[in-house]
Amino acid sequence: DFLFSQTLRLPFFSRILFEQNLRDDLRYYFMSPCEKYRARRTIPWKMGVQILKIIMITIQLVLFGLNNQLVVSYKEENTMALKHLFLKDYSGVDEDEYSVAVYTQSDVYDSLFYVLDQYSQLGRLSVGPISYAEDGDGNLLPLVVCKEYYRSGRVDPSEETYDIDAQLETASHFKILLVRPTFLLFFRLINVKLTFQLKGINLQTVRSRELPDCYSFYVTITFNNQCHSGKVKIFLDTDATSSACRDWKISGTAQKNTHYLLVFDGFVILVCITSAVLCTRSIVLAVRLLQRFARFFQENFNRKVCEEDQDEFLNGWYVMVIISDLMAIVGSILKMEIQAKSLTSYDVCSIFLGTSTLLVWVGVIRYLGYFQKYNVLILTMKAAFPKVLRFCCCAGMIYLGYTFCGWIVLGPYHEKFEGLSRVAECLFSLLNGDDMFTTFAQLKDTNTLVWLFSRAYLYSFISLFIYMVLSLFIALITDAYETIKKYQKDGFPLTDLQKFLRGQGDFQVMEEDSRTDTEQSVLCCCRRYEHHV
Image 1 (cartoon, rainbow, N blue to C red):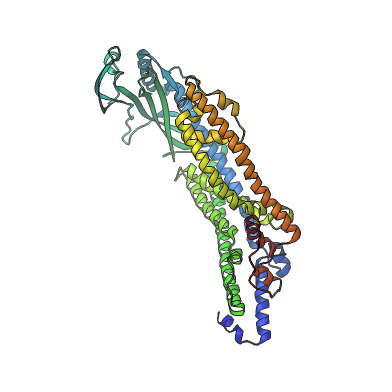
Image 2 (image 1 turned 180 degrees about the horizontal axis):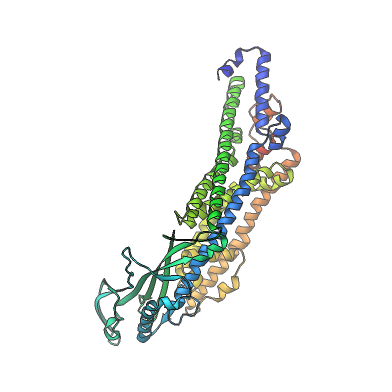
Protein backbone atom coordinates (compact mmCIF):
# COMPACT_ATOMS: atom_id res chain seq x y z
CA ASP A 1 0.00 0.00 0.00
CA PHE A 2 2.83 2.38 0.81
CA LEU A 3 4.49 1.73 -2.53
CA PHE A 4 1.22 2.27 -4.34
CA SER A 5 0.51 5.53 -2.50
CA GLN A 6 3.84 6.81 -3.73
CA THR A 7 3.12 5.89 -7.37
CA LEU A 8 2.50 9.46 -8.53
CA ARG A 9 5.83 10.59 -7.06
CA LEU A 10 7.83 8.03 -8.98
CA PRO A 11 9.38 8.84 -12.32
CA PHE A 12 7.26 8.28 -15.39
CA PHE A 13 8.93 5.00 -16.42
CA SER A 14 8.41 3.61 -12.89
CA ARG A 15 4.66 4.26 -13.09
CA ILE A 16 4.57 2.61 -16.46
CA LEU A 17 6.32 -0.43 -14.97
CA PHE A 18 3.86 -0.53 -12.07
CA GLU A 19 0.92 -0.34 -14.48
CA GLN A 20 2.36 -3.16 -16.58
CA ASN A 21 2.83 -5.33 -13.51
CA LEU A 22 -0.78 -4.77 -12.49
CA ARG A 23 -1.95 -5.57 -16.00
CA ASP A 24 0.10 -8.78 -16.01
CA ASP A 25 -1.34 -9.83 -12.66
CA LEU A 26 -4.87 -9.20 -13.89
CA ARG A 27 -4.31 -11.13 -17.08
CA TYR A 28 -2.85 -14.01 -15.12
CA TYR A 29 -5.81 -14.04 -12.73
CA PHE A 30 -8.32 -14.38 -15.57
CA MET A 31 -6.37 -17.11 -17.39
CA SER A 32 -7.48 -20.73 -17.53
CA PRO A 33 -5.38 -23.32 -15.66
CA CYS A 34 -3.74 -24.45 -18.91
CA GLU A 35 -2.87 -20.88 -19.89
CA LYS A 36 -1.39 -20.24 -16.45
CA TYR A 37 0.82 -23.30 -16.87
CA ARG A 38 2.02 -22.16 -20.29
CA ALA A 39 2.59 -18.62 -19.07
CA ARG A 40 4.47 -19.26 -15.82
CA ARG A 41 4.81 -23.04 -15.61
CA THR A 42 2.57 -22.99 -12.55
CA ILE A 43 1.15 -26.42 -11.80
CA PRO A 44 -2.67 -26.16 -11.51
CA TRP A 45 -2.87 -27.62 -8.01
CA LYS A 46 -6.38 -26.36 -7.45
CA MET A 47 -7.72 -28.08 -10.58
CA GLY A 48 -5.89 -31.29 -9.68
CA VAL A 49 -7.40 -31.25 -6.20
CA GLN A 50 -10.87 -30.72 -7.70
CA ILE A 51 -10.45 -33.69 -10.05
CA LEU A 52 -9.22 -35.90 -7.20
CA LYS A 53 -12.09 -34.70 -5.02
CA ILE A 54 -14.68 -35.52 -7.68
CA ILE A 55 -13.40 -39.08 -7.94
CA MET A 56 -13.16 -39.66 -4.20
CA ILE A 57 -16.50 -38.09 -3.27
CA THR A 58 -18.27 -40.05 -6.00
CA ILE A 59 -16.74 -43.32 -4.77
CA GLN A 60 -17.67 -42.42 -1.21
CA LEU A 61 -21.24 -41.64 -2.25
CA VAL A 62 -21.63 -44.94 -4.12
CA LEU A 63 -20.32 -46.96 -1.18
CA PHE A 64 -22.60 -45.21 1.28
CA GLY A 65 -25.55 -45.41 -1.11
CA LEU A 66 -25.23 -49.18 -1.46
CA ASN A 67 -25.16 -49.57 2.31
CA ASN A 68 -28.08 -47.17 2.74
CA GLN A 69 -30.14 -49.18 0.25
CA LEU A 70 -29.67 -52.27 2.41
CA VAL A 71 -30.87 -50.35 5.46
CA VAL A 72 -33.94 -48.94 3.69
CA SER A 73 -34.89 -52.29 2.13
CA TYR A 74 -34.54 -53.98 5.54
CA LYS A 75 -36.93 -51.47 7.15
CA GLU A 76 -39.45 -51.66 4.32
CA GLU A 77 -39.47 -55.46 4.18
CA ASN A 78 -39.81 -55.69 7.96
CA THR A 79 -42.80 -53.36 7.83
CA MET A 80 -44.39 -55.54 5.16
CA ALA A 81 -43.67 -58.68 7.20
CA LEU A 82 -45.25 -57.15 10.32
CA LYS A 83 -48.39 -56.26 8.38
CA HIS A 84 -48.73 -59.84 7.20
CA LEU A 85 -48.09 -61.11 10.72
CA PHE A 86 -50.48 -58.89 12.69
CA LEU A 87 -53.22 -57.76 10.29
CA LYS A 88 -55.96 -60.29 9.70
CA ASP A 89 -56.80 -60.85 6.00
CA TYR A 90 -54.11 -58.43 4.83
CA SER A 91 -53.88 -58.61 1.03
CA GLY A 92 -50.41 -57.12 0.67
CA VAL A 93 -51.65 -53.86 -0.89
CA ASP A 94 -52.51 -50.72 1.09
CA GLU A 95 -55.53 -48.63 0.12
CA ASP A 96 -55.37 -44.87 0.69
CA GLU A 97 -52.61 -45.29 3.30
CA TYR A 98 -54.59 -47.76 5.42
CA SER A 99 -53.90 -51.47 5.26
CA VAL A 100 -57.20 -53.17 6.11
CA ALA A 101 -60.80 -52.07 6.62
CA VAL A 102 -63.54 -53.89 8.58
CA TYR A 103 -67.25 -53.20 8.64
CA THR A 104 -68.80 -55.30 11.42
CA GLN A 105 -68.33 -55.42 15.16
CA SER A 106 -67.40 -59.08 14.91
CA ASP A 107 -64.63 -58.26 12.43
CA VAL A 108 -63.26 -55.55 14.73
CA TYR A 109 -63.04 -57.96 17.64
CA ASP A 110 -61.58 -60.70 15.45
CA SER A 111 -58.88 -58.33 14.24
CA LEU A 112 -58.07 -57.22 17.80
CA PHE A 113 -57.80 -60.77 19.09
CA TYR A 114 -55.78 -61.71 16.01
CA VAL A 115 -53.11 -59.15 16.89
CA LEU A 116 -52.91 -60.44 20.47
CA ASP A 117 -52.73 -64.08 19.37
CA GLN A 118 -50.03 -63.37 16.80
CA TYR A 119 -48.03 -61.34 19.28
CA SER A 120 -48.06 -64.19 21.80
CA GLN A 121 -46.79 -66.63 19.14
CA LEU A 122 -44.22 -64.36 17.51
CA GLY A 123 -41.25 -66.58 18.35
CA ARG A 124 -42.54 -69.53 16.32
CA LEU A 125 -44.24 -67.52 13.54
CA SER A 126 -41.61 -65.08 12.25
CA VAL A 127 -38.97 -66.37 9.81
CA GLY A 128 -36.68 -63.40 10.49
CA PRO A 129 -34.36 -62.62 13.41
CA ILE A 130 -36.93 -60.62 15.37
CA SER A 131 -38.13 -61.01 18.97
CA TYR A 132 -39.69 -59.22 21.94
CA ALA A 133 -38.04 -56.16 23.50
CA GLU A 134 -36.86 -56.18 27.10
CA ASP A 135 -36.34 -53.47 29.67
CA GLY A 136 -33.14 -52.87 31.62
CA ASP A 137 -33.99 -55.60 34.13
CA GLY A 138 -34.54 -58.28 31.50
CA ASN A 139 -38.35 -58.18 31.67
CA LEU A 140 -40.43 -58.26 28.48
CA LEU A 141 -42.05 -54.97 27.53
CA PRO A 142 -45.83 -55.41 27.44
CA LEU A 143 -48.25 -54.84 24.59
CA VAL A 144 -50.38 -51.77 25.38
CA VAL A 145 -53.98 -51.27 24.26
CA CYS A 146 -55.15 -47.65 24.36
CA LYS A 147 -58.77 -46.60 23.72
CA GLU A 148 -59.84 -43.02 22.88
CA TYR A 149 -63.55 -42.25 23.14
CA TYR A 150 -66.14 -39.60 23.97
CA ARG A 151 -66.68 -39.23 27.71
CA SER A 152 -70.38 -40.04 27.47
CA GLY A 153 -73.08 -40.11 24.90
CA ARG A 154 -76.39 -41.38 23.63
CA VAL A 155 -77.25 -41.73 19.95
CA ASP A 156 -80.59 -42.71 18.38
CA PRO A 157 -80.46 -42.35 14.57
CA SER A 158 -84.07 -43.50 14.14
CA GLU A 159 -85.32 -40.65 16.33
CA GLU A 160 -82.68 -38.25 14.97
CA THR A 161 -81.50 -37.46 18.49
CA TYR A 162 -78.12 -37.51 20.18
CA ASP A 163 -76.49 -36.41 23.40
CA ILE A 164 -72.66 -36.34 23.20
CA ASP A 165 -70.05 -35.06 25.63
CA ALA A 166 -67.28 -34.03 23.22
CA GLN A 167 -64.60 -34.31 25.89
CA LEU A 168 -62.24 -37.13 24.92
CA GLU A 169 -60.97 -39.69 27.38
CA THR A 170 -58.22 -42.26 27.07
CA ALA A 171 -57.88 -45.62 28.76
CA SER A 172 -54.78 -47.82 28.54
CA HIS A 173 -54.54 -51.51 29.37
CA PHE A 174 -51.54 -53.80 29.73
CA LYS A 175 -51.90 -57.48 28.88
CA ILE A 176 -55.68 -57.19 28.89
CA LEU A 177 -58.24 -59.89 28.20
CA LEU A 178 -60.87 -58.58 25.84
CA VAL A 179 -64.51 -59.23 26.65
CA ARG A 180 -66.53 -58.66 23.51
CA PRO A 181 -69.93 -57.54 24.86
CA THR A 182 -68.61 -54.67 27.05
CA PHE A 183 -65.21 -53.70 25.74
CA LEU A 184 -66.22 -51.27 23.00
CA LEU A 185 -69.12 -48.87 22.54
CA PHE A 186 -68.70 -48.05 18.88
CA PHE A 187 -70.82 -44.87 18.78
CA ARG A 188 -68.46 -43.36 21.40
CA LEU A 189 -65.24 -44.95 20.13
CA ILE A 190 -62.72 -42.75 18.29
CA ASN A 191 -59.86 -45.21 17.89
CA VAL A 192 -58.06 -48.14 19.47
CA LYS A 193 -54.25 -48.27 19.39
CA LEU A 194 -52.12 -51.31 20.10
CA THR A 195 -48.45 -50.49 20.66
CA PHE A 196 -45.53 -52.78 21.30
CA GLN A 197 -41.78 -52.91 20.72
CA LEU A 198 -39.75 -55.55 18.90
CA LYS A 199 -36.02 -56.13 18.37
CA GLY A 200 -34.27 -57.24 15.18
CA ILE A 201 -30.81 -57.56 13.58
CA ASN A 202 -29.98 -56.64 9.99
CA LEU A 203 -27.71 -59.51 8.99
CA GLN A 204 -27.66 -58.73 5.26
CA THR A 205 -24.89 -56.11 5.71
CA VAL A 206 -22.51 -59.01 6.36
CA ARG A 207 -22.55 -59.68 2.61
CA SER A 208 -21.10 -56.21 2.01
CA ARG A 209 -18.49 -56.94 4.69
CA GLU A 210 -19.89 -54.48 7.21
CA LEU A 211 -20.96 -54.99 10.80
CA PRO A 212 -24.70 -55.69 11.25
CA ASP A 213 -26.91 -53.19 13.10
CA CYS A 214 -29.42 -53.96 15.83
CA TYR A 215 -32.88 -52.41 15.38
CA SER A 216 -35.76 -51.45 17.64
CA PHE A 217 -39.18 -51.49 15.97
CA TYR A 218 -41.89 -49.41 17.63
CA VAL A 219 -45.12 -50.82 16.19
CA THR A 220 -48.50 -49.05 16.37
CA ILE A 221 -51.68 -50.68 15.09
CA THR A 222 -54.60 -48.22 14.93
CA PHE A 223 -58.29 -49.06 14.55
CA ASN A 224 -59.60 -45.72 13.26
CA ASN A 225 -63.31 -45.01 13.79
CA GLN A 226 -63.21 -41.19 13.63
CA CYS A 227 -65.69 -40.95 10.76
CA HIS A 228 -68.30 -43.18 12.48
CA SER A 229 -69.35 -44.16 8.99
CA GLY A 230 -69.50 -47.90 9.56
CA LYS A 231 -66.00 -48.39 8.17
CA VAL A 232 -63.13 -48.93 10.60
CA LYS A 233 -59.73 -48.43 8.99
CA ILE A 234 -56.75 -50.34 10.35
CA PHE A 235 -53.30 -48.80 10.09
CA LEU A 236 -49.95 -50.36 10.98
CA ASP A 237 -47.08 -47.91 11.43
CA THR A 238 -43.51 -48.69 12.41
CA ASP A 239 -40.71 -46.46 13.61
CA ALA A 240 -37.35 -48.20 13.36
CA THR A 241 -34.17 -47.02 15.07
CA SER A 242 -30.79 -48.69 14.73
CA SER A 243 -27.94 -48.92 17.19
CA ALA A 244 -24.73 -50.83 17.76
CA CYS A 245 -25.27 -54.32 19.12
CA ARG A 246 -24.12 -54.72 22.72
CA ASP A 247 -22.33 -58.03 22.27
CA TRP A 248 -21.19 -59.40 18.94
CA LYS A 249 -18.64 -61.65 17.34
CA ILE A 250 -18.04 -62.00 13.62
CA SER A 251 -15.55 -63.96 11.55
CA GLY A 252 -14.21 -62.81 8.21
CA THR A 253 -13.16 -59.43 6.83
CA ALA A 254 -16.06 -57.20 7.91
CA GLN A 255 -14.11 -55.52 10.71
CA LYS A 256 -11.06 -54.97 8.49
CA ASN A 257 -13.26 -53.54 5.75
CA THR A 258 -14.73 -51.04 8.21
CA HIS A 259 -11.22 -49.83 9.10
CA TYR A 260 -10.38 -49.33 5.42
CA LEU A 261 -13.55 -47.27 4.91
CA LEU A 262 -12.73 -45.08 7.90
CA VAL A 263 -9.26 -44.39 6.50
CA PHE A 264 -10.74 -43.58 3.09
CA ASP A 265 -13.28 -41.16 4.64
CA GLY A 266 -10.48 -39.49 6.56
CA PHE A 267 -8.55 -38.96 3.33
CA VAL A 268 -11.68 -37.46 1.73
CA ILE A 269 -11.89 -34.97 4.61
CA LEU A 270 -8.22 -34.05 4.09
CA VAL A 271 -8.74 -33.45 0.36
CA CYS A 272 -11.85 -31.32 1.03
CA ILE A 273 -9.97 -29.21 3.59
CA THR A 274 -7.17 -28.67 1.04
CA SER A 275 -9.70 -27.67 -1.61
CA ALA A 276 -11.44 -25.23 0.73
CA VAL A 277 -8.12 -23.65 1.75
CA LEU A 278 -7.01 -23.21 -1.87
CA CYS A 279 -10.34 -21.65 -2.88
CA THR A 280 -10.33 -19.35 0.14
CA ARG A 281 -6.81 -18.30 -0.77
CA SER A 282 -7.96 -17.52 -4.32
CA ILE A 283 -10.82 -15.38 -3.00
CA VAL A 284 -8.44 -13.44 -0.74
CA LEU A 285 -6.01 -12.87 -3.62
CA ALA A 286 -8.90 -11.73 -5.85
CA VAL A 287 -10.04 -9.20 -3.25
CA ARG A 288 -6.51 -7.82 -2.93
CA LEU A 289 -6.17 -7.61 -6.68
CA LEU A 290 -9.47 -5.75 -6.89
CA GLN A 291 -8.27 -3.28 -4.28
CA ARG A 292 -5.06 -2.67 -6.25
CA PHE A 293 -7.02 -2.15 -9.45
CA ALA A 294 -9.55 0.16 -7.75
CA ARG A 295 -6.80 2.32 -6.19
CA PHE A 296 -4.98 2.50 -9.53
CA PHE A 297 -8.09 3.81 -11.27
CA GLN A 298 -8.79 6.28 -8.50
CA GLU A 299 -5.24 7.61 -8.45
CA ASN A 300 -4.66 7.78 -12.21
CA PHE A 301 -8.11 8.39 -13.72
CA ASN A 302 -10.03 9.79 -10.74
CA ARG A 303 -12.89 7.35 -11.17
CA LYS A 304 -14.27 4.28 -9.42
CA VAL A 305 -14.44 0.77 -10.80
CA CYS A 306 -17.96 -0.01 -11.99
CA GLU A 307 -19.99 -2.72 -10.25
CA GLU A 308 -19.84 -5.00 -13.30
CA ASP A 309 -16.03 -5.04 -13.19
CA GLN A 310 -16.06 -5.54 -9.43
CA ASP A 311 -18.26 -8.61 -9.85
CA GLU A 312 -15.64 -10.17 -12.13
CA PHE A 313 -13.30 -10.53 -9.17
CA LEU A 314 -15.92 -12.23 -7.00
CA ASN A 315 -15.83 -15.76 -8.39
CA GLY A 316 -19.06 -17.53 -7.44
CA TRP A 317 -17.56 -20.88 -8.38
CA TYR A 318 -15.11 -20.65 -5.49
CA VAL A 319 -17.94 -19.96 -3.06
CA MET A 320 -19.86 -22.98 -4.36
CA VAL A 321 -16.76 -25.19 -4.06
CA ILE A 322 -16.22 -24.08 -0.45
CA ILE A 323 -19.86 -24.85 0.39
CA SER A 324 -19.56 -28.30 -1.21
CA ASP A 325 -16.32 -28.92 0.71
CA LEU A 326 -17.94 -28.04 4.03
CA MET A 327 -20.93 -30.28 3.31
CA ALA A 328 -18.63 -33.12 2.23
CA ILE A 329 -16.62 -32.77 5.45
CA VAL A 330 -19.75 -32.89 7.61
CA GLY A 331 -21.16 -35.80 5.60
CA SER A 332 -17.88 -37.71 5.86
CA ILE A 333 -17.76 -37.22 9.63
CA LEU A 334 -21.33 -38.50 9.93
CA LYS A 335 -20.48 -41.45 7.71
CA MET A 336 -17.48 -42.31 9.88
CA GLU A 337 -19.67 -42.16 12.98
CA ILE A 338 -22.20 -44.44 11.29
CA GLN A 339 -19.47 -46.88 10.27
CA ALA A 340 -18.22 -46.89 13.86
CA LYS A 341 -21.81 -47.54 15.06
CA SER A 342 -21.85 -44.31 17.08
CA LEU A 343 -24.64 -42.70 15.06
CA THR A 344 -27.55 -43.91 12.94
CA SER A 345 -28.42 -40.69 11.06
CA TYR A 346 -28.48 -42.24 7.59
CA ASP A 347 -30.89 -39.69 6.13
CA VAL A 348 -28.97 -36.65 7.39
CA CYS A 349 -25.70 -38.11 6.12
CA SER A 350 -27.31 -38.83 2.74
CA ILE A 351 -28.43 -35.20 2.41
CA PHE A 352 -24.95 -33.83 3.11
CA LEU A 353 -23.13 -36.31 0.86
CA GLY A 354 -25.69 -36.05 -1.93
CA THR A 355 -25.72 -32.25 -1.98
CA SER A 356 -21.93 -32.01 -1.85
CA THR A 357 -21.62 -34.46 -4.77
CA LEU A 358 -24.19 -32.46 -6.74
CA LEU A 359 -22.27 -29.21 -6.23
CA VAL A 360 -18.95 -30.88 -7.07
CA TRP A 361 -20.21 -32.14 -10.40
CA VAL A 362 -21.90 -28.82 -11.18
CA GLY A 363 -18.51 -27.18 -10.58
CA VAL A 364 -17.12 -29.09 -13.56
CA ILE A 365 -19.03 -26.61 -15.74
CA ARG A 366 -16.48 -23.96 -14.75
CA TYR A 367 -13.73 -25.81 -16.61
CA LEU A 368 -15.96 -26.57 -19.60
CA GLY A 369 -16.59 -22.84 -19.89
CA TYR A 370 -13.05 -22.35 -21.21
CA PHE A 371 -14.04 -24.17 -24.42
CA GLN A 372 -15.92 -22.17 -27.03
CA LYS A 373 -18.47 -24.86 -27.96
CA TYR A 374 -19.51 -25.56 -24.37
CA ASN A 375 -19.32 -21.89 -23.51
CA VAL A 376 -22.49 -21.15 -25.51
CA LEU A 377 -24.62 -23.44 -23.35
CA ILE A 378 -23.21 -22.08 -20.11
CA LEU A 379 -23.61 -18.44 -21.11
CA THR A 380 -27.18 -19.07 -22.26
CA MET A 381 -28.07 -20.59 -18.91
CA LYS A 382 -26.47 -17.73 -16.97
CA ALA A 383 -27.90 -14.99 -19.17
CA ALA A 384 -31.45 -16.36 -19.21
CA PHE A 385 -31.58 -17.21 -15.51
CA PRO A 386 -32.47 -13.73 -14.09
CA LYS A 387 -35.33 -13.13 -16.51
CA VAL A 388 -36.56 -16.72 -16.22
CA LEU A 389 -36.55 -16.39 -12.43
CA ARG A 390 -38.64 -13.21 -12.56
CA PHE A 391 -40.99 -14.84 -15.05
CA CYS A 392 -41.41 -17.92 -12.83
CA CYS A 393 -42.27 -15.72 -9.86
CA CYS A 394 -45.15 -14.19 -11.80
CA ALA A 395 -46.32 -17.52 -13.21
CA GLY A 396 -45.99 -19.06 -9.74
CA MET A 397 -48.69 -16.75 -8.39
CA ILE A 398 -51.15 -18.09 -10.96
CA TYR A 399 -49.97 -21.64 -10.24
CA LEU A 400 -50.59 -21.21 -6.51
CA GLY A 401 -54.06 -19.85 -7.22
CA TYR A 402 -54.94 -22.93 -9.25
CA THR A 403 -53.45 -25.13 -6.52
CA PHE A 404 -55.61 -23.73 -3.73
CA CYS A 405 -58.69 -23.63 -5.91
CA GLY A 406 -58.28 -27.26 -7.05
CA TRP A 407 -57.70 -28.46 -3.50
CA ILE A 408 -60.79 -26.82 -1.97
CA VAL A 409 -63.20 -27.66 -4.82
CA LEU A 410 -61.99 -30.97 -6.26
CA GLY A 411 -60.31 -32.44 -3.17
CA PRO A 412 -63.39 -34.31 -1.87
CA TYR A 413 -64.07 -35.82 -5.32
CA HIS A 414 -60.65 -36.59 -6.82
CA GLU A 415 -57.78 -38.50 -5.19
CA LYS A 416 -55.15 -36.37 -6.97
CA PHE A 417 -56.52 -33.22 -5.31
CA GLU A 418 -56.83 -34.49 -1.72
CA GLY A 419 -53.85 -32.50 -0.39
CA LEU A 420 -52.04 -29.32 -1.38
CA SER A 421 -48.84 -31.17 -2.20
CA ARG A 422 -50.74 -33.70 -4.33
CA VAL A 423 -52.53 -30.91 -6.17
CA ALA A 424 -49.22 -29.18 -6.94
CA GLU A 425 -47.76 -32.46 -8.21
CA CYS A 426 -50.82 -33.19 -10.34
CA LEU A 427 -50.80 -29.72 -11.92
CA PHE A 428 -47.08 -29.97 -12.63
CA SER A 429 -47.70 -33.27 -14.42
CA LEU A 430 -50.49 -31.70 -16.45
CA LEU A 431 -48.26 -28.74 -17.26
CA ASN A 432 -45.79 -31.14 -18.86
CA GLY A 433 -48.50 -33.01 -20.75
CA ASP A 434 -48.46 -36.10 -18.53
CA ASP A 435 -51.45 -38.17 -17.38
CA MET A 436 -54.08 -35.82 -18.80
CA PHE A 437 -56.81 -38.32 -19.73
CA THR A 438 -56.54 -40.14 -16.39
CA THR A 439 -56.94 -36.89 -14.47
CA PHE A 440 -60.09 -36.06 -16.41
CA ALA A 441 -61.51 -39.59 -16.18
CA GLN A 442 -60.93 -40.21 -12.45
CA LEU A 443 -63.17 -37.37 -11.29
CA LYS A 444 -66.28 -38.71 -9.62
CA ASP A 445 -69.37 -37.40 -11.43
CA THR A 446 -71.68 -37.66 -8.41
CA ASN A 447 -71.98 -33.86 -8.30
CA THR A 448 -72.88 -32.25 -11.62
CA LEU A 449 -71.87 -28.74 -10.57
CA VAL A 450 -68.42 -29.88 -9.43
CA TRP A 451 -68.02 -31.94 -12.61
CA LEU A 452 -68.73 -28.90 -14.80
CA PHE A 453 -66.37 -26.76 -12.71
CA SER A 454 -63.62 -29.38 -13.01
CA ARG A 455 -63.78 -29.26 -16.79
CA ALA A 456 -63.51 -25.47 -16.87
CA TYR A 457 -60.72 -25.63 -14.28
CA LEU A 458 -58.62 -28.25 -16.08
CA TYR A 459 -59.12 -26.89 -19.59
CA SER A 460 -58.24 -23.32 -18.54
CA PHE A 461 -55.13 -24.46 -16.63
CA ILE A 462 -53.83 -26.65 -19.46
CA SER A 463 -54.49 -24.01 -22.11
CA LEU A 464 -52.95 -21.18 -20.10
CA PHE A 465 -49.77 -22.94 -18.99
CA ILE A 466 -48.99 -25.11 -22.01
CA TYR A 467 -49.90 -22.68 -24.79
CA MET A 468 -48.82 -19.44 -23.13
CA VAL A 469 -46.59 -19.83 -20.07
CA LEU A 470 -44.35 -22.56 -21.48
CA SER A 471 -44.11 -20.81 -24.84
CA LEU A 472 -43.00 -17.57 -23.19
CA PHE A 473 -40.59 -19.52 -20.99
CA ILE A 474 -38.91 -21.05 -24.05
CA ALA A 475 -38.93 -17.67 -25.82
CA LEU A 476 -36.90 -16.10 -23.00
CA ILE A 477 -34.21 -18.75 -23.30
CA THR A 478 -34.21 -18.53 -27.10
CA ASP A 479 -33.83 -14.74 -26.95
CA ALA A 480 -30.82 -15.05 -24.64
CA TYR A 481 -29.27 -17.65 -26.94
CA GLU A 482 -29.70 -15.48 -30.04
CA THR A 483 -28.20 -12.48 -28.26
CA ILE A 484 -25.14 -14.50 -27.24
CA LYS A 485 -24.65 -15.78 -30.77
CA LYS A 486 -24.87 -12.22 -32.05
CA TYR A 487 -22.22 -10.92 -29.65
CA GLN A 488 -19.95 -13.87 -30.28
CA LYS A 489 -20.08 -13.06 -33.97
CA ASP A 490 -19.82 -9.25 -33.76
CA GLY A 491 -17.83 -8.91 -30.55
CA PHE A 492 -18.68 -7.84 -27.00
CA PRO A 493 -18.52 -4.15 -25.97
CA LEU A 494 -15.50 -3.59 -23.73
CA THR A 495 -15.63 -2.50 -20.10
CA ASP A 496 -12.94 -0.48 -18.33
CA LEU A 497 -11.34 -3.67 -17.05
CA GLN A 498 -11.18 -5.24 -20.50
CA LYS A 499 -9.77 -2.04 -22.02
CA PHE A 500 -7.08 -1.96 -19.35
CA LEU A 501 -6.18 -5.61 -19.97
CA ARG A 502 -5.83 -4.89 -23.71
CA GLY A 503 -3.67 -1.83 -23.09
CA GLN A 504 -6.24 0.70 -24.20
CA GLY A 505 -6.23 4.03 -22.39
CA ASP A 506 -9.66 5.40 -23.32
CA PHE A 507 -11.70 5.19 -20.11
CA GLN A 508 -14.35 7.77 -20.89
CA VAL A 509 -17.76 7.25 -19.39
CA MET A 510 -19.84 5.33 -21.91
CA GLU A 511 -23.03 7.00 -23.03
CA GLU A 512 -26.27 5.24 -22.29
CA ASP A 513 -27.01 2.95 -25.22
CA SER A 514 -30.17 1.34 -26.53
CA ARG A 515 -29.29 -2.27 -25.77
CA THR A 516 -32.14 -4.45 -24.55
CA ASP A 517 -32.29 -5.88 -21.04
CA THR A 518 -31.37 -9.29 -22.42
CA GLU A 519 -28.28 -7.91 -24.18
CA GLN A 520 -27.13 -6.08 -21.05
CA SER A 521 -27.63 -9.13 -18.84
CA VAL A 522 -25.77 -11.25 -21.36
CA LEU A 523 -22.84 -8.82 -21.23
CA CYS A 524 -22.67 -9.09 -17.46
CA CYS A 525 -22.51 -12.88 -17.69
CA CYS A 526 -20.14 -13.15 -20.63
CA ARG A 527 -17.36 -10.73 -19.75
CA ARG A 528 -15.60 -13.12 -17.43
CA TYR A 529 -15.08 -15.56 -20.29
CA GLU A 530 -13.73 -12.83 -22.57
CA HIS A 531 -10.98 -11.64 -20.22
CA HIS A 532 -8.49 -14.37 -21.02
CA VAL A 533 -8.88 -14.04 -24.80
